[in-house]
Each structure stands twice: as structure tokens, then as C-alpha cells.
Image (cartoon, rainbow, N blue to C red):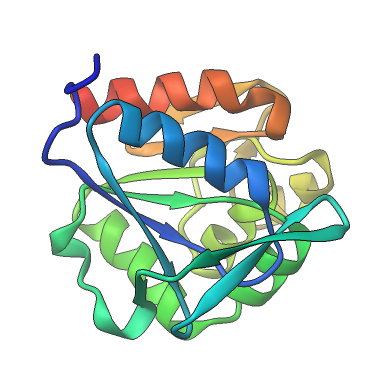
Length: 179
């Protein structure tokens, strides 16, 4: 499994306030499997992860939304975190990137509040998915079939509810990318 994702590139789209473990857990698993995972944000410099409601570690931004092209990536990872998710969902470039990923059948892996971006980009209609429970109404109103499950795979969309689900989320993401 150490090289099962060799040559695969994953774009991790975040702004300040992402749930730190929802970035670090999947990123470490992807890199351990041989993938390259890049942190992509709205501006250069650093982004700050959070542990629930407390700012935590700063992370180097590899590239910005306006400098990448989805054809260069195999998947998109969307960590949650209320602050990050509320900010990124209104970013037109982030919306366009996930729309490009969906149009080209890239894997989109989203956890917790990260699903807000997909709802704002009009990408959840008809999709079976999960999220943090407080997004249930938002996702249903956007046309998703919301379920309370650890991980849900619907075509190229992989979703999970919360940090406790990260091991199952990572397993589903790596399996999808290795296929």
C-alpha cells in the first residue's frame, strides 16, 4: 500500500479555520500511500488550522486557487471546520475548482462542514452523502439525500461526518484513488 497512490496528486482546498485533524489525518494517509497532497488556498503564505474553536498550527500554502488547474489533480479534499467552510463556500474560485473537479469526474472527498462548499457550488443535488449533523437541512435543501453514516461513497463523491470518521474516510479515499 505504500506506493499504491504513487503519481497521484490531491488538491486540499482550505482557508483559515479548517479543522486541523481533517487536513492532517487524510494528508498523512495519502502521502503514506505515495500520493502528493498540496494545500491550496485563496492567498499565499500560511493558513491556520483549528482544534474545534481554538486556533492551532499554521500550514504553508503550496498554491493558490487562481494558479491551479483541476486537470493537474486526481482528487480534491475538502476538510471541514466551521470558519473555513463558511468562508470558502462564498469564494467563487473555490466553487469553480470543485465544479471543474465534478465535470471531469475527479474524486471529491469532503468531511464535516466541508460540504457547504459543494452545496454552494450546486454539486449535491441527487447525491447521497453525510456531513456534520448541523448541515443536514442545508444539504437536503440543496437536493442531497443526507444519511447519518460514517462514510458514504456516491460515484466520485466521498463524504464523512466528523474527525472520529477519519480512519474510514481515509480508507475509502485511498481505495477510490487506487482503483
